[in-house]
Image 1: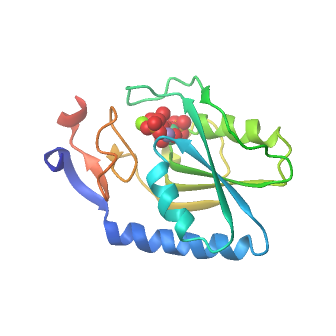
Image 2: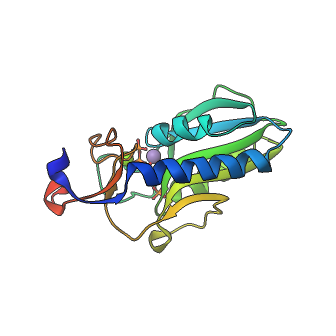
Amino acid sequence: MMNDIKEILIDKDQLAERVRELGEEISADYAGKEILMIGVLRGAVIFMADLARAISVPVALDFMAVSSYGASTSSSGVVRILKDLDEELDGRHVLIVEDIIDSGLTLNYLVENLKSRRPASVKLCTLLNKPSRRKAPVHVDYNGFTIPDYFVVGYGLDFAEKYRNLPFIGVLKPEAYGG
Ligand code: PRP
Ligand code: MN
Ligand code: MG
C-alpha cells in the first residue's frame, strides 16, 4: 500500500492537531446546544470518528450514503441517495461531516436536501477542500485543509475502496490509478 504513495501531504500529527482545533472551535460555536452530526458514507467515517471525540457538547451520529463517483476518479455529476437518515431533522442542529469537497456536486445537493427537512441549522465541516475543482457552489463552515488538485487517499479517502485505512493523507502515484 505504501508503495503506491508518492508523498505524505498531511501526516498523522498534523491531522490530529487540526482535528483538535476544529473540535474546540465547533464546541465553542455550539455551546449549550446538541449537534446532530451527519457523516457522508463512506469517506467521512474516519474523520468523523476523531472529530466527534474532539467535541465537548453532546453529539448524536447519523449517516447518509450518496453516490456520484463509483470507481471513477472524476464525478459523473449525478447524485443519488443510497441510504437516507434514520433521524428526523426538525429543530436539530445539523453538522454535515465530509472528508473532501471536490466538484461540490455532492454537497451542493445534500445541503439543500437537508435544509428542506426544517432543521434549526445546517453547517458543513470538511477535512479537505479542493476549491480549484469546484463546479457547484458550496459554503464550507469548517475547513480542515485547503489542498491543490492532487489525487489524495488515506484517513477515509479511497481509490476503488483501497487506502482508506492509511493514517495520513497521501498523494497517490499516477501508476496506482492508471494515470
Ligand atoms: C467522494 C468524497 C466526497 C465526494 C466529493 O466520495 O468522499 O463525498 O466524493 O466529491 P464532489 O465534491 O466532487 O461531489 P465518493 O463518491 O468517492 O464515495 P466514498 O466517500 O464512499 O469514497
Ligand atoms: Mn464520500
Ligand atoms: Mg471515494
